Length: 80
Image 1 (tube, rainbow, N blue to C red):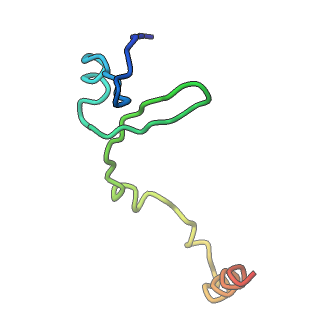
Image 2: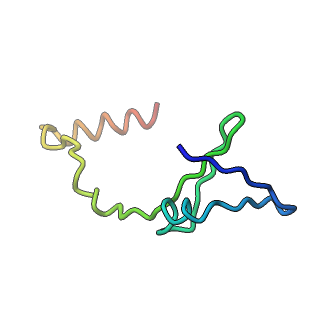
């Protein structure tokens, strides 16, 4: 664990140590701020290629024997 003490300037800015920025935020400038009771957590936000997950989910549609009955049940749930 590392720690640093910094001042908040008149505009509410805090400077992070350069090594921390290089280690944690070198590939992004977007940061997620999470407020937890009496603390703030900074997390880097990186772009994720969601297309790599498109065919990875098995919905089990091969198990459906009567597709029309399945659709009827789904639409009945939507009306409820």
